[in-house]
Image (cartoon, rainbow, N blue to C red; front, side):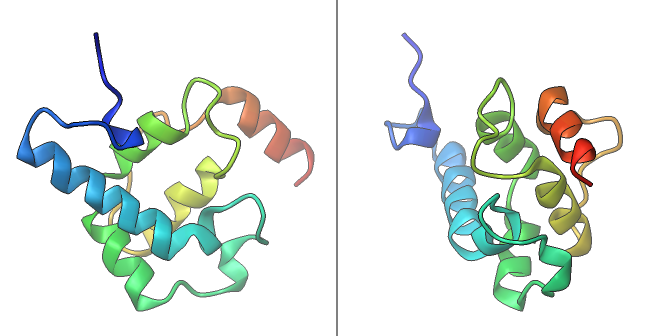
Length: 110
């Protein structure tokens, strides 16, 4: 049985705890900039607190847990990638963050 630690279940090691806390803080302090509810964040410069957590967060893990496999209903993957890049924690080139379906929808309305 595998337990999904992103949902607050018991983690396997202390390293996982710090990664999950980092992701939680990233969501709390940066949701305005990455959420589908709010306008595109580039109209609003991210504050330093958001950038501080964006730099500390494992963005690749965030993408895997919250933006792949049809889970991209709350956050825009392009906003997450742009924010991470803006704040100095870029996603490696070629890393998949989000779904192709989401990118098609975003490009259709751009």
